[in-house]
Length: 454
Image (cartoon, rainbow, N blue to C red):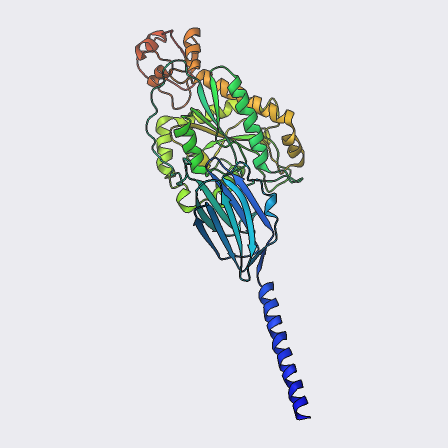
């Protein structure tokens, strides 16, 4: 009888221990984070993999060779996502494997070639929650190391011959930064890229011009690097950033054009849109050493000296006038607004930002999705740029040659000097004075000068 009681007690204790172990184990398993979303973006120099996290997750990354592999361990996490749905065909990734362990999930990237891995755990920022970003930089990529913005670039080589005027076309947002979204879910990053590609095609089909796309796919380029690419890689004469933003008031509508400000924003809307645009680096997950560290005050000082702000305003007015023929303007105003847009902080380049419409407005979202409307927007921007180049041709350019052949006239803009105008049209200052009966170098805004044939 005693033995039976002891056996029963032993069975009870063993069962209790087993139950407690089971309860503890199930609690530990349930405490693991479940990752339900993974995204992949391919850029020219790297591949970005993004794990959307319900909460912060510890991780470890290893680089292995023979064969080349990148191993990411997600601690106390379960991956509930089919990685075979990721499109990595044009990346150095050959295959992705997932293994589940008791205390972690292991993700193995089999590589076609060696890469340099880098990770970044990002805090929540609208529209994202916690994210783990894994960047795989191409071994031979030109930007394997983060690009730093140089506030004062080296002078461009003096162009020779009838060269084309270069337009850097920047599609706003991209990759992890979707930009604004419309009522039906349209992402700004997709609209801006579609319009940018249409504009680039039209520029390249026009005489005397050449377009370069700052980004040509769904990936993010840091704001400072966009300027660096346009200035140093493309030697651009003009930088145009394309956007289709949103406002707190869903009824806000109409296109706008912006230039950099040296006196604060010209309106509450301009200030708001600049704030949203300048947060793109945070949304995309830019590393600390890739962030813009240029001094705005010194940039603005340079801009005032070189007259780039004045020229940007003039270009903006030409574009705005053309946009008025194809779409509504915000507030019906034919004024180029100004604010502290980080992407426009380039002292040696004429730069504008074009808001093609408000994607937050249901009617304009529908228009912006239309290929015919996108084409009209692109055509309007093209005509505005052509108008600017006719009055402000760079020395040695096709447009300068056309002006010389016509013996055209030039209307003085704010910031112009006689020496700069003479340089633009490849004529001497003495010839310019003689043709216009000038007794000094003093010129007035709005004054029309005859340009003598050289």
